[in-house]
Length: 130
Image 1 (spheres, rainbow, N blue to C red):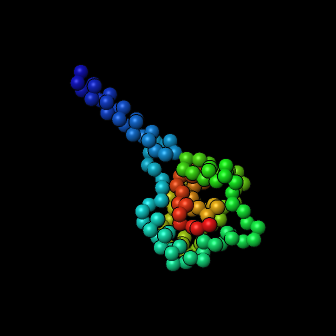
Image 2: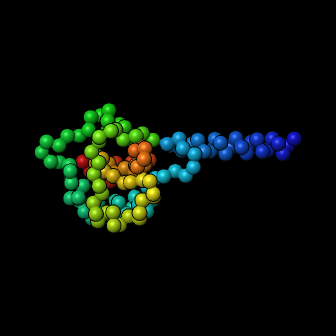
Image 3: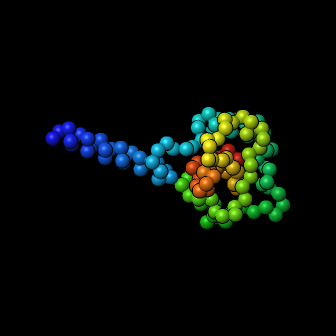
């Protein structure tokens, strides 16, 4: 009987641990690694004018608050939102992104997005100044 209770408890622990991921998926969490964050910060520190690409131009506007709030983990990107590619020098410094994901810049934030679903898996909002 004790063995049956132990198995049941272990199964419940496994199930509850899998449901704790931010996007609600069971399995490994896909986020920016510490080494990627360090490389991104270093690159933008050494290339301060690069974050202005696409920002600060005459007539450019920030996203409406409702859309800006949706640039968060676990939420899909709004349809038709303008995405920018990372600067070439930064791409060269970073390891390749996991298959099925892409790194993009949206409204001054660096996002890690699942290509098929457009679900945001991680957001770095303090890397690129607006």
